[in-house]
Image (cartoon, rainbow, N blue to C red; front, side, top):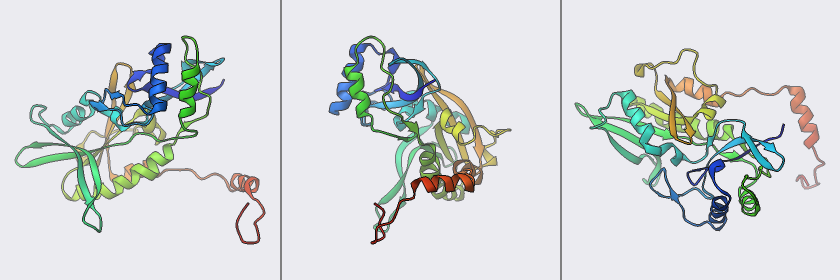
Amino acid sequence: MTTRYGIAEWYGHDFRALAEDQRRELAKAALDRLERPCPFRGGPCTKTGGVCSMRPYTADGIHLDEPAGAPVIMCPYRFEQDSTLTRWLAQIVGFDPAEAMLAREVPFMVGATGRPAGKVDLVIAAEHHGLRWYGLEIQAVYFSGPGMDSEFRLIAAAAGPRPPFPSQNRRPDWRSSSAKRLAPQLQIKVPTMRRWGSKLAVAVDRPFFDAVGGPSPDPSHDLDAGDVIWLVSEATPTGLRTDHWEVLTLEQSCEKLLAAIPISRTDFEGQLRDRLQPMHPNGRTP
């Protein structure tokens, strides 16, 4: 059975629910880089091509058949639908919704020049015998493979009511999203927040969380038991659904994100032999 990742949500729309003329309209907007509204951030879409999420599909000839997995969120603004995450975090930490406040992109680090060098995506806060606050870092998933323009052209040219099956192989790059992107953010920000007596929450979707090991065998909801509040949600046609949360230490969180099993020496050397080429006299490979 052939399975490939294709568009799940496009400029905020369920891809499979779009009519042929709507797909063509969005394909033109994506190819021409036209401005389109984002229903999740309350402004223009900032994602080149407008793809909010992707999911695996099976093929029915040249057309899409059934989904073979959940949507994987590619745009961080997809997590902001209806303020679901910030309201969920406020509930978890015990903030009164009527008193909770929100700030965006709060500077957290400065470089050698004194200019901001890093920010916290979102911060929720409340005045309760002084200012109490919690950071919220949002992590979408990077994809590897060919760019999406070939897909947009295919969609623009396809006739009939059914969407075409993706023409190229693309996949979520869990490693880049977790070990290379999110883990360094936690290692930099969490120790300082811990010294300041606060915590960092991390928002990911269910496929991301499952890719780094999934829920703990005995998930903790004790805010004093760790440093990182993991918020796991799912993108659905009816909205962002809260799915799972737990508290982990920084060390446990990084262990999840950095975990990788090396291949055997035999497999490594077999792949190495397939890639070896003669060197030029100047030391460069052809």
